[in-house]
Length: 467
Ligand code: NAD
Image (cartoon, rainbow, N blue to C red):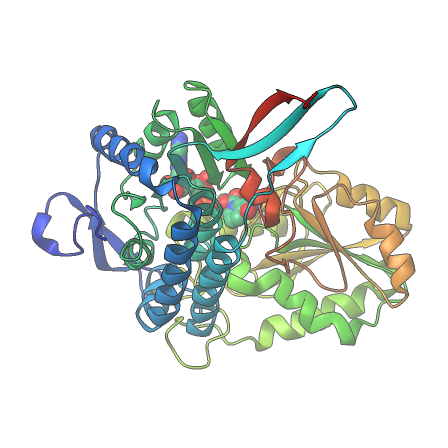
């Protein structure tokens, strides 16, 4: 029960890269700067480990359940490290650790169903589900642990082995998670690799990989799909979103304002399925803007490890620059910052929680994914226009409708072109549900049994019916 991952020591200096604390901008840790040339050995070992791992489902379940327990037990180490490198408030890091363990437990106990088919011909077909082989998982920096387990939990439960690459912005908590999980598994069943590009590109293109499962931005998702085409590996892509929240005429603004605010600002807005645009009826527009702005002004911004912090920094300097740029462009085109509107004058990557009113619908802060603590609020006169604006995007991850008459809200939600629609809340997922974006938000399905089958292939045995 060991792993060949390099130890977390400074012993290999020169082959490490520094990790920055987004609350200060200062370096605070190091991760191994692994090179693409190392992948041949790593993938070959993952392939060798696959033989034993796929053979015994009961042993797999037991090992994965033990790993889930170990994650929970390691929360006291994982959560502060996650906050330090990612920026989120400590309580949210603990919640992320809990969800990471819960997802592993959920998939550990899920088994594919073999079944017999009949289409009235005299042949009995039986489906047996088989794992694919070594899986490459590539994840971003916004929920490093939760997204890692969203990849490795279904892949390992299905009987595959996994080579996982976190973002170079957040390698440390993932490495620790890898050590904790690997200690409960046979050697080389789960391997974490850290480093800079082209490490991910070469992993996605590696001929020994049979499934590439990626979460990240649309342009990189496209590149990953092209890389995986080299070996015709299966591809699952969970990509960006530009989710709209459509408020109806009968919405109780004060009642929903907290929930709506946090659906946009949790994790500093760095959530693929955060509310990224709000459409409010013209009659309620100023009430909605003011309710959200009040909350934006009141929120406690600070280092994730500081007690009382509700909103941390953005994770990295390029992301802060992007949010600043989108906000400045909107303001230059006539938008009003009713709260915030600027980065904070302090070390680290802090941006003031920002509510933008009077934003042009074609402003990039509306049409692109801002992925930060900036929320444009737009008025509408006619509900059909609101639905059309909500759908007028290349993305299709989620969307929500907010109102008092739930039947009416549900009818409107049914018109949204997205994978998941919520009523009076947003971005909450059950482990048991399918999660899939439409349009440019993704390819394939994660979550629930669909996530498990996404890591399996059908093997069909045909035999004649007994005479
Ligand atoms: P990103 O696409 O820049 O990077 C994602 C990962 O891919 C990182 O590990 C990165 O190092 C790696 N990578 C970069 N170039 C690569 C290449 N050419 N080949 C292979 N791998 C490469 O995304 P990000 O900035 O880290 O994360 C933010 C994005 O992730 C947002 O668009 C967000 O919406 C999206 N996201 C989507 C979901 C979802 O489930 N749909 C969840 C979280 C985040």
